[in-house]
Length: 234
Image (cartoon, rainbow, N blue to C red):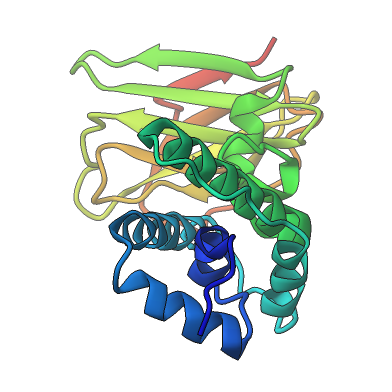
């Protein structure tokens, strides 16, 4: 059987299984005698495998067919013997494969720089808000507590570092303070974590401050002891 003049150009299509049965048989026969094409096919398949790790959701059943249709419209030029030509042609196929994948699955590609609110946790939304108000306090034993409040998000977060555990049988209860001075229970800090982060319960849009009290009953609805920390929002 006579090989087509552009048999080398099938390396890209063969790597992504975009050849028909006749082309496959011809090219596999050619691969037995062409080290350059064997190297290129291996490189392109490795690149395609790396592209697969970028998806964050199950691709639709039609993905393979759509990509093959796109790949079928692209044919690289036959390579020159020079290594530079082989390298250029290989990267051209990689770029074409990337474009095909992105065009087909679009939002299925992970973009770590995407910070749209629906992809952030509440704590992250508060922390990154332009109006985030941070109030930090240090205790005599060196521990620290910080409350972050965002009026635009309407929530607040408390973070602690090296926080000593509360006395036996007691709990750290966190409160949000309304403009009239009323303290509203906003959560109980975990007793076994010295470094913790917790989103406070309740709407913090109108809150003017927060506080921490030590309580024997974690379900109290109003403070029964003097606060060990008060955070005033600006």
